[in-house]
Amino acid sequence: MRIAEPSLEEWKTLYDAAIEFRKIEPWEWMKETEVFGVQNPQNGEVGYCCIMGELGEVLAMAVYLGTEGLQGYMKIQKGQINPDEPDSLYIQDCLMLSFEDKRFVDQEDRQIINELGFKFRGRNSWPLFRRYKPGYFPWFLSRDEALYMTDASKQAKEVCLRLKENKKLLNPPKKNLYFTRVPEKRDGMIVWKDEWREPAPLKKVKYLDEEVDEVRIQRIRKTAKPTPKIWEIDFFYTPTPIAEGERPYFPYAIMLIDCDSGFILDMHLAREAGYKKEFLEKFLSCIEKMSILPLEILVRKEEAVNLLEPYTSRLNIKLSVVKRLENIDNARRELGKYLKKP
Image 1 (tube, rainbow, N blue to C red):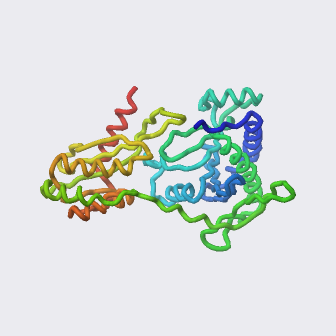
Image 2: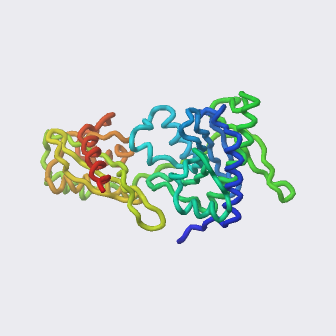
């Protein structure tokens, strides 16, 4: 189903809000660690705003969507995910308003700007709006996203100006509370008020709906021989998007490597929707094809542990969490070079 796009009038309202936000230059006094919330009037979800531009290189505001979006931001801030690591590019769940040079503005954006009659000149002057969604290429805003980004931009301007006068504005009365702008309907009008809010609970992650295939486990036990081999197993986003459907996406690469030889036992590309099931399937089918049981499996993601553990425990395979997967990291670099070739 085609996603509804903003009307020309709605685009104008959003660009007007962005222009007004740009005028106050909030990055002159705001730090990236100063985060505040703006509740979406449409669905009640709170987006968490982060102003970027302290160093003068990137002038932008990210609105991290919900607790999941905030968690991704916090992982980078706390050093749990290195911003220089490739995966950091694919985990962001946010709406982004950035101010760019003309050469970074796509033709679709320029067409809207021309239709609206706006003129932008100079460095970091052109407003650019993008939706960052885990596993997908940064994309144009839908109508609902544009409406919310308009509200977020207006409220962010107000909060930033207030913080300039009151440095303690965002200091919470107790831990895990965020200063949040909340819409309230009064006499048919939306009025915004301040509240201190705790982020909503994280949505429970479902790993797999299927029960463990006990019959398959028994079959593997009968046919596969134990060996001293150690395997590295991982899944990660590939750096080259695939243009398919409404929006290009980054496929997951599922990779299994023998530690001693560095030989790639299997590699497979999967879509976001099915990668968990396919990850487990590739692990089991590799054992079945080779008719061997490795002594140990090395992984680095908690998600990989949750997917593999029900099977490795039944097959008496040691499952170890490590910080680095040397062979997989080497193979990943080579894969990236290959995919980026013209």
